[in-house]
Image 1: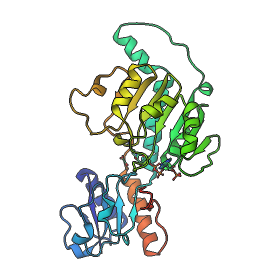
Image 2 (image 1 turned 90 degrees about the vertical axis):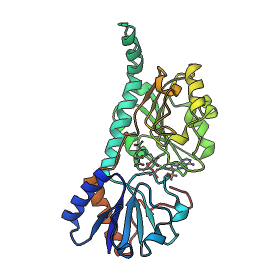
Image 3 (image 1 turned 30 degrees about the horizontal axis):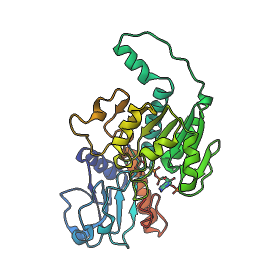
Length: 308
Ligand code: NDP
Ligand code: OXD
């Protein structure tokens, strides 16, 4: 019985060390050195190989090393093999930090001050109290909820949108397609923390932007294909949207000379909002292996019918 890791090799080396300390009886392999394929029971991957059970006939569980699993071809993973995404404290804390800095950057007009600095302009903008700034998060899952719980502490007016009804203390929760327009109409800073599925692909488009109040801003930390880039550029150029902070794009990276790279009201980071932290992730994976062996549900097991 063995565990195989197939993702970033440097992080894999950290996982190997942690497995050696915390689960010395479970042989750990780093792709492509997987040894006897029949011994591989557990696979942790960013991109699993095509048709993994053809290579590893005794595979029991596939773990995503990321929170999202849209990069997986689920049709290649047989229905009897559970797929588990990453829910671990490190990835949550990273996302809370990133979104908090992005919200404060917009809230305290730092994009404008950056532009003023380029012109050597010294001019104060009026400060809006946090209570008058309306934050809206698309996606009230593990990450969206954690982000809202932190933003509430600043006093922002917080709301969120999900597929099924949710309750989060101090957050105005909206659910379902019919509730989207009302949620958008009260949102000044929109944060995307949705999984990428057929229902959410392209959701951030001209139609959605038109439902936001004039001067709203976007923080995109979901997946690149949620966003229609031409529609975003048009909304920024018309002044309907004020700023966009993009951590994910499609493709990654954007091609040279793509207009988003140089747009004065766009900030881009290279998909670093958050990443799985090996020390905390290995603890969660080992706990899930314990649960799997005990016949208990694993934390982060995805619903294949919903695709997330
Ligand atoms: P979860 O699965 O915990 O939460 C997803 C949320 O989105 C749920 O609230 C879900 O609704 C909602 N949702 C899904 N589909 C729809 C829909 N069609 N309409 C309305 N709401 C919908 O995911 P996480 O919070 O853990 O992660 C969210 C995403 O963040 C990941 O899938 C990934 O894309 C992105 N991510 C980005 C990172 C980065 O570095 N940029 C790092 C990590 C993640 P319901 O509650 O009803 O199920
Ligand atoms: C993830 C990511 O999904 O890094 O974990 O984007």
